[in-house]
Each structure stands twice: as C-alpha cells, then as structure tokens.
Length: 206
Image (cartoon, rainbow, N blue to C red):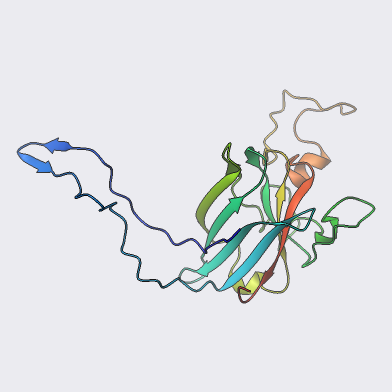
C-alpha cells in the first residue's frame, strides 16, 4: 500500500450552470478540472507515518508551514474502522505497542503548552472521519503549533472513538459525580477511547 502526501486541489463540478446570459460549458472529455500533475510533490516540513497495533502502515500525516505561526495539516488514511475518530498530537515521540497500559500509551497525553482542559490543548485537532471503505482525507490549518514544534519531539494518535472535545452540558451528570458537566477523563481526552494508530513526527518523510 502506497501513500502520497496530499496537496490541495480544486475540482470543477460536472454540471451545466446558467447565470443570466452567461453559460459555463461542460469540461472536455478527459478534463477533470484538476490542476495538471507535473509529477512534483510539495515537500512537507514535518511528517508522520501512521501505523496500527500490528505494525501495518495505515496513513500519512504531513505538516506544511503556512506563513507566520500557521501550519497546514494533510492526512491520508486507508485501512481504519469507519466513523469519526479522535485525532491528536501527543506529548512524546514514542509509539510502543507492548505496554501494560495499552498500545501507544508511550506517547503520553495530549501535547499542550499550558495546563488546561481538552479542547484547549495545543495538540487537539479536528476529528478524522473514515469512510465505509476505510479511507479518509483531511486537510486543515491551525495556529496551535508549527512543524518545528513537533518534529522529532511528538507523536500523532488516532483514537478508536469520536472526540466530544469536552463538550458535556451541565445537565449531564457523570456516574459518581455530584455536579454536571465533563469529568476528569473527558477534560483530558474527550472520551476518544483506545489508541488505534500512532506515528512519530519527523523532520523528513522516509
């Protein structure tokens, strides 16, 4: 299975649109409306190869500097369970599978510059949605970290469950709690569950 670092492209819609007296023609046969592929790939400033518990490569994460203090993150996945998954940068550059506490616990907690609750951690990222065929693509821009903050220092984790970002209204009272709202586990992780894929962030793609 091969992965390619994703580069944002724009696709033209395959439809006829009339606007006043103007008309947009359908693309010619073989013209998919995408930018021409000249064989070149954008070089990532940092990169993580995602592997599952069995050591199989299931995805790539590329980090690109986007001006001052901004980073574009491109994620390509193939072979994960369908549905929404918590997706975070974690503190430690370690993806050990054999751990008494569970796979990839060696990566520690969410990367964060200051103490605070989830979703205020520097490493908190948008959820990853995986289609029924096990594939996913996600691209977003963040100002919470730069590739330099991450390379050779952090890991990227995909979790088994959706991430609620600590959004638990006061009317919900957790078992054993007297007051409503998020409990300690929710504030730490967003209840995203087990860790099913991990990748150490490095300065250059392998």
